[in-house]
Length: 172
Image (cartoon, rainbow, N blue to C red; front, side, top):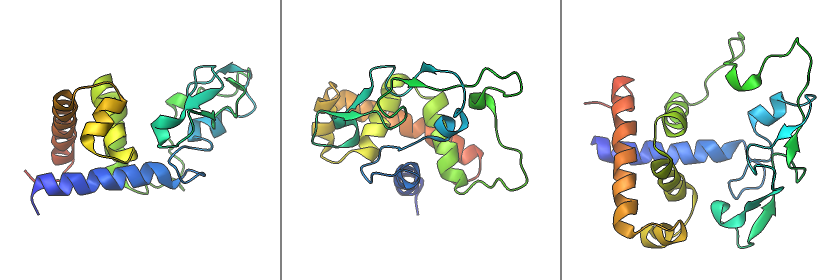
């Protein structure tokens, strides 16, 4: 199997991996790991809806214009604990003996998408693999030309492919 086809397969697997822990079946998380880790802490602005208490429905392929934010459940804030005993959960990587990476390729792709891609590339990749429709329609939905959408998608795929080859998940 050539790398291009294998990369597409891994990207589809990544999209499914992102949805697996989600409740609603339309690809939006009920609660993120970070949200669960922050339970019991004093309030901070929700990182998903940025305090707006709702998220755009088009981002998840829903027909309604807006949905209540599933992370803060419409509160606009997430509770955090002032205790000096707790560390910021955003910077903790589990080292407990029971922790296992359930899908190393998807976790690596997710890390590349969230940390190494430019915002436009990230937006296009998330749109491509999490929303239905033709590429032309997806490009229009996020306000890009079809040519720019395809270029950003190709650039994102290239960056992900380099990391997957280095990790020996894909062959050179």
